[in-house]
Amino acid sequence: MDRMQGSMGTLSAMQLTADTTGLDAECKMLLHRKEVISVILKGTVEEYEGYSLEEIMDFIEADSLEGTKEVSVNRTNAQVRGDNAEFAQLNEKVSFFDLLFRAKNPVLSKDGMLSGDSMRVDLHIDIESQKTYRPGYPIEKRGLYYLARSLSAQLSLVTEQTDYGGLEKCYSIWICRDDIPKQEQYSVSFYEIANTKNIGDCMVNKKDYDLIKLVIIRLGNMVYNGDEGSEGYRLLRFLNAIMYPHEEDFMDTILDYIDFSANEELWKETNGMFSLGQCILEDGMEIGMRAMVMDNLEEHTPVERIIEKLQRHFGLSRERAERYYEKFTQEE
Image (cartoon, rainbow, N blue to C red; front, side, top):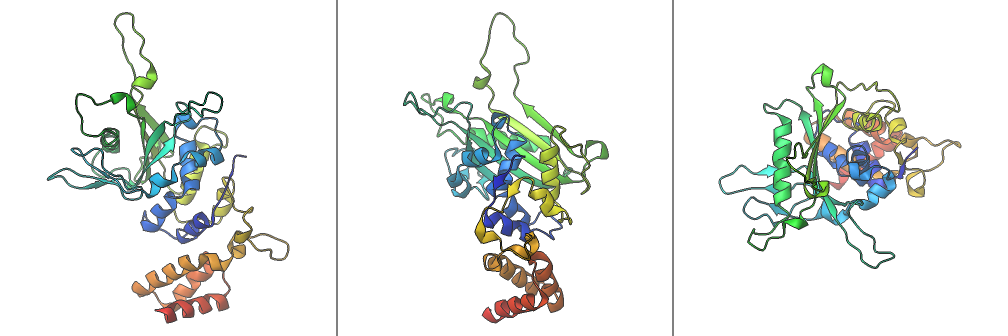
């Protein structure tokens, strides 16, 4: 079973999104975790076929997830913000990427271990979480538009000396959650540039035009009953778990992809058994607990309900939940 080591931050994000009912900020925060991104890339990026989840995690450029770039039609060399990238033109409505980042293209890169000639080529990847598949326009057209902007953003001001040979491949991956026609639920579509016809004797290298790829992932109705081992099964099963309110078997599913047990800071032994909900060290979860308490107070949630949420989401006893509630409210 292909699994990768998980971090405390990802585990915390999963706790915070346990009760999410929509694609809110907390849910999108989870989609920004490298472990989650790696599972998505494993099931959608052809260049990563045959690579493990751990290797794919290493391909992701962490700096590009945190950098600040603005992408514009007329200033295509501007910065792209990994968690909230925008592109805009004068008098144009500002548009935002959900998550735009770079990751190594192992097919075209050279490591230089023997020759000394190393070269890194990246993929430019955009991941979009979409609540509805039917927002009033075809998602496919919007995805292609995003790809065009992402491709043009790689070049500085175009001149007669512009080197188009430096353009790198772009992916736009859309995860659509709701309003999927029944016959299309739990399906994935891939769109790319193809050489459809040649007249005369010619042969063009695919890497010279294989520059954009659109992936549309359609989920369904919270229940995924795909056949284990079938194409797309692991991707759809994982996304179905994290994109909806968490079911009782949520962590059983996640542990098939992400292994948290090797990090001693995440676990403590209870009666010789390991239970994720009860064994996460609470100190590492305080930021998430505090955020939950403050958010619920702002929404005027009753104290009893807040304490119940702390118990359920963080595996706390009633006494401990009350103690944390008092601590956070007194700090304010």
